[in-house]
Length: 160
Image 1 (cartoon, rainbow, N blue to C red):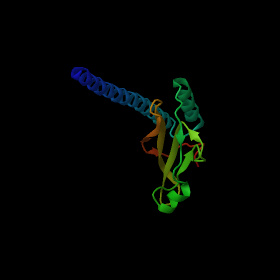
Image 2 (image 1 turned 30 degrees about the vertical axis):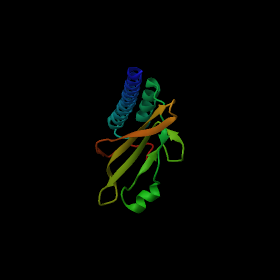
Image 3 (image 1 turned 45 degrees about the vertical axis):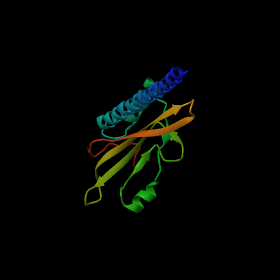
Image 4 (image 1 turned 90 degrees about the horizontal axis):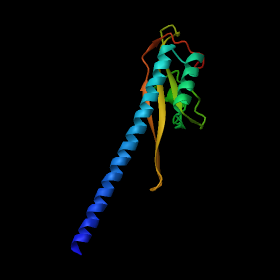
């Protein structure tokens, strides 16, 4: 009787470790896919020197081709709050932070020369992914952030 109880404990411990390892593996796969998507979006923005019609079409085509469906909310802080705090200036979001869920959020951070003309900008890209464990009723959303290189005189069509 004593050996059967001991085997039950060992079986329980093995099942817990298998569950933890499987969860870690699933999280890693989702994170790496989101990281690849973020890098591809940054490459397309840098390729076209900003958020142009061509770069947006390429980004949307890429997301549709790979079947990336994770979504998240673009804005936790409004542009007015950012300007009031003085952290970022000239930030415009594409798509706008209207409470809807998007696959990707792109923020433009502009730099102006002393005469007040736009001289350069870089873009912050946020891609979302979710982690769901149905048996435990656990659902959590995460995001991956990245930035483009500084682009001199960006050719934006959507971000003014």
